Length: 90
Image 1 (cartoon, rainbow, N blue to C red):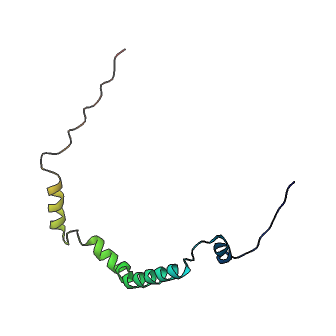
Image 2: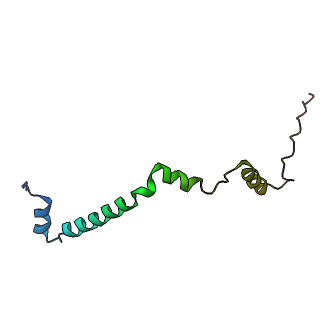
Image 3: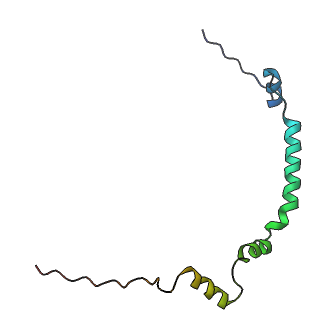
């Protein structure tokens, strides 16, 4: 024997039927705090602010950039030249 029961209810009604807790007030409070925090921090993510943050570590002039690269690679750290391959004689 086979029986099928279709129940139509909202998620809130299903939670109440199964005895699950109602988290809607807590979720609304958390979302409100999240929204306030996002709106207060939105100015930090403007294009001008992001560019200033990203480029603040780079030198402002060419000499400073050259000095930065010179500090990264010591003077004797040049790559050795590759030797040409010889053709084999068969």
